[in-house]
Length: 188
Image 1 (tube, helix red, strand yellow):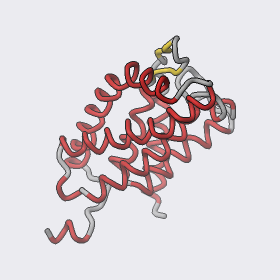
Image 2 (cartoon, rainbow, N blue to C red):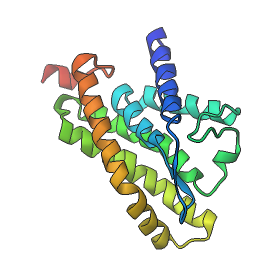
Image 3 (cartoon, rainbow, N blue to C red):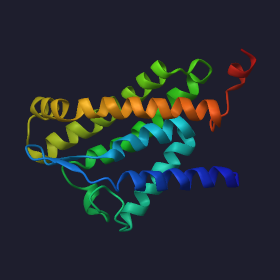
């Protein structure tokens, strides 16, 4: 792995930590915080790609696991990985990979609308696909009830985050692309 790849991985793990500085907005009925950190997987995958983005998220999660208070609200250690809302954290890892993979596949056609759709698929769809069933199982809430509660509380803000992430992804792609175009994209 090249030195610049290691720097990008560390830089985006640090960006994820910075997104945790913004105080969480707790939804009392669900006990799940709304955080800026859910935009992190969108940025990591969309800017770094699947491999480097996923490694960056793994680095961030490892730093949290060893006790650094990098999650929104100053949380760290192993406790955040076993609570009712932990599935959303695991969803970040899957979402980062999916967003990176999709961004790489559509690199030659990447536009704001497409980047937005990719951010929504990974940053909302994948995270909810992992997080909501985990939350329902751990909290004793029904799956439909957990989904409806999450959809009402989180989707509007997550759509805004996906829009911001898509704009940043496109701006970085134009100014300083960190994902190399695939061979087929270069010849097109």
